[in-house]
Length: 295
Image 1: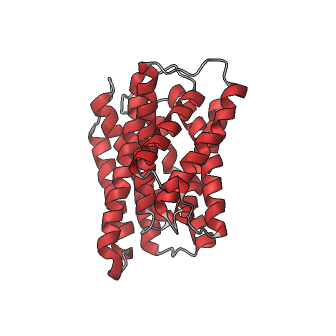
Image 2: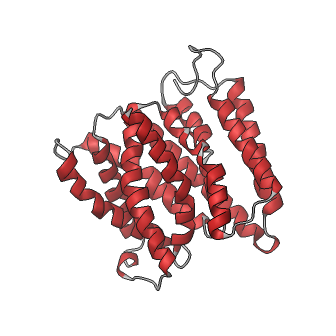
């Protein structure tokens, strides 16, 4: 039951996070992501005293897990925040929906007993066609070059996210999810500080909704979301965790439309349908014992 509740909460959080990403990076995208992670890293520490019975580990095996767990945040979240300057929140959600496919490829390469068959290849093709249908007709003429770069950066973000998920699973860690989340957040804080030391000490002039978005993304998205996410990574297969992004795109599109005046076109809905259909086909098994990348 706890796994089901965690799964539902993560889906709800990931449905609303794309808009928070877009809003929190309107003035300064790097400050938006760095402040979000730093606030989350600070607020998550008291949970260690209240909910953890094991001491926080600084052994090499644990540090390696923290580093891999930071890949979706330091690598994935940072690149997605940059891309979100030129993409709608719905587009961000659709790109994140590719995570199961990319995770499947990494799982095939890095995890034992993972296979990719013809069905998976067809699913990848359907999903790619869906992305083309979503993006190509809706690119803005004056921003087409930078938007294409943003889409590429968003895909790199998905690769970081998928690789981190698989590598944490590959380590077979028995570390508590809370410890993994804390380690990942603080590795990311250190990484952001090394990239731009002055960022967190120079607060830009933010609009109210940017501050609210950063706070929401930090507390709900980073603290609650990451703890639940790594809890799922520990207790279910990597591919079942990666299937989470399949659900939010439709709802994220509607939220972006009503709260951020994002345009919804016919091609966007058709493309999103193709992407989701491809991802469902990717995970579908005709026989209970059929082996796939979700094994």
